[in-house]
Amino acid sequence: MKGLKTFYICSECQYKTPKWMGKCPNCGAWNSFVEDVEEAPATASAPAPRRVSMIPTGEHRTVRFEELEIPEYLRQITGLGELDRVLGGGLVSGSVVLLSGEPGIGKSTLLMQICDALGDTRRVLYVSGEESGGQLKLRAKRLGIVGKNLYILTETNIEKILQEADKTKPDVIIIDSIQTVYSSGVNSTPGSVTQVKEAALTLINKAKGEGTSVIMVGHVNKEGSIAGPKVLEHMVDAVLYFEGERQQAYRIIRAIKNRYGPTNEIGVFEMTDRGLEEVENPSEMLLAGRPRSISGNCAVCTIEGTRPLIAEIQALVTQTAFPAPRRTTNGIDYNRMCLIIAVLEKRLGLKFWQNDVYLNVVGGLRLDEPASDVSVAMALISSMTDRVVPDDLIAIGELGLAGECRAVSNLEQRVREAARLGFAQAVVPFRNLEKRKPDIPGIRLIPIKGIYETLNLLQKQE
Ligand SMILES: Nc1ncnc2c1ncn2[C@@H]1O[C@H](COP(=O)(O)OP(=O)(O)OP(=O)(O)O)[C@@H](O)[C@H]1O
Ligand SMILES: [Mg+2]
Image (cartoon, rainbow, N blue to C red; front, side):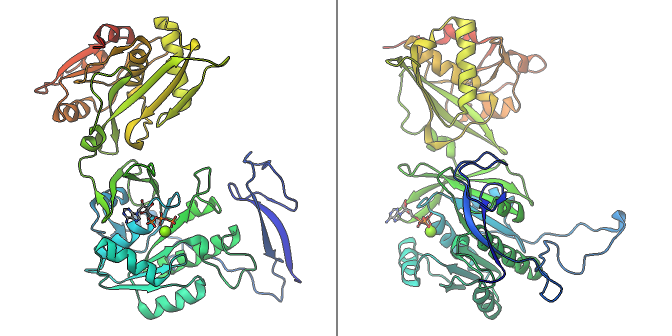
């Protein structure tokens, strides 16, 4: 077609090239190029491309900083406490939220439940490009959702969606999913980078102009990042990831970005046949069914946002049959594990180079904090030596390269949570107790200066 130009675009970094390439020269991603078409640049006679602003109209003028007023963000409580926590206290009017997750993880279920919870006070328009009205009704029946104030639209053309929205006048628009939506003004297939971007921009315009909140689902590709342009993440106000192990019932929702709240909070749900149920006490859930007196297990306390979470680390150290031993991790950074193994080899003389190492955090939790180092190290030592970490012991502390145990933040909060869950001993960094020793009933603190001090805490396996 005249005026159209075919090109290839990297779905990770938006690098453009006229020819397909296997590896992006800009960001180094493999197989990330997708075909797209672009209209020729605007000439004097053709209209200029549409510009989209993320700021409400009428505010485009220079003002003195002192004259600016702090806006009062209107928050709508979604009714799902765990989600409200991740959003920073509810859904902000006029905000655009991108909800992403692997196929079948429960995104549509969560959205349906949000519709139900919001339905008491708000009008919600649920735009589905993937499921028919009947399928949605069937799910709603299973979840026990009546759908008061809920409007369903099975449409994928963004212009038509906006026309319908103008009629329905919803407070919240849900788009399931953004990859199915297309604009007739753009000449490329639905799901392509240009289409996804155009549809998202149109929705952002609507949200910012009219104060309507928009939640859109974004599918993730096999590498786990949101399929489509990375720029989508930059455009929206909040990016939420819904994750979990499909075989297990737990689902964790976390904010990767949030313009209206913190990003370190997580929300925990359990998938049941009646839908997602909030888990108010995740530590109890994560510790449920914990094996007793088995080598390789150690409890850990991590802080997720404002909330301490207790989980369990499991290590399996076995003799290797390979020239290069295997190392796999789940829930812990691979390089961090290698570092801890190197420290244990050098400082304690443990011969990990003869062994395969498998490391797992139970419950699909991800530990990013160095405060879990000592616990990982104790689980590794325990499996290596076939000696058991006492069931009532929890380990907290960061490991230095010299094998020293370094101080951590929020120690008291972590120990209190451990005591609440019935732990009777806590290995803690000596440095944390130098200034003040917290007095927490029911739990004995074992201050350590180095990882070697944990060796005599392990017990013989029965
Ligand atoms: N009858 C049921 N009982 C229990 N769990 C169910 C039942 N039906 C569906 N589920 C759960 O719901 C999940 C599918 O939920 P949902 O359709 O909301 O996921 P999704 O993330 O929207 O998927 P998609 O990527 O296909 O849009 C299933 O993987 C399953 O865990
Ligand atoms: Mg779905």
